Image (cartoon, rainbow, N blue to C red):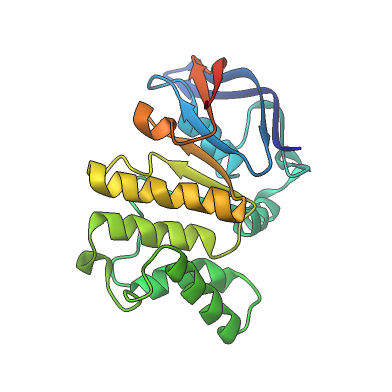
Amino acid sequence: MSLIECRSLCKDYQRGGEAVHVLDRLDLSIDRGSYTALMGPSGSGKTTLLNLLAGIDRASSGELLVDGTDLAQLDRNQLALWRSRHVGYVFQLYNLVPVLSAYENVELPLLLHDLTAAERHRRVVEALESVDLATRHGHLPRQLSGGQEQRVAIARALVTQPTLLLADEPTGDLDRTNADAVMDLFGRLHRERGQTIVMVTHDEAIARRAERTVRLEKGRLATVEVAR
């Protein structure tokens, strides 16, 4: 069953008075519970597509439905509320707040939700345990390794129990050992929780961890490869 439907999806930007077509009539379906890698050369539209799926940006035309919701029909406030409930986003450079502890960074998105302090605490502890950081609650980002910082960022993305987990080059700033550990975690989340994951990467070895690799070229679907 499709969780995401892109139909003739277009995204244009103005550059020096000229329209640049970043996504050009893209048709793409992504199933609920699937694990998809997005690949393609720089400028092919990978991160643009990820930001549209997250509700961070808006399409110029076409349809984008996520879990039955037409994102084009939501106003700015509705889109922010939808994003807080349905999307977890993992960035390449972690985007942790440096003066907040690991616990506080993970708790941050829950402050937008109508939850008791006890429920917030339960969710934060559970999220940190799920990424094997149960003993690092009080550590600041500077007291953690790069791999640990990224795992805190993943816990923050998971703590709202999102419908969709999006990741933009999540291993791009890590060495191979830490990259493998993060990808092992993604695989476990997919297998054990049935988490829907869409991940942008330039690394073929990382892409092979996913069930399916979608390649974009010049804003259009080039190929779809299913893992053997």
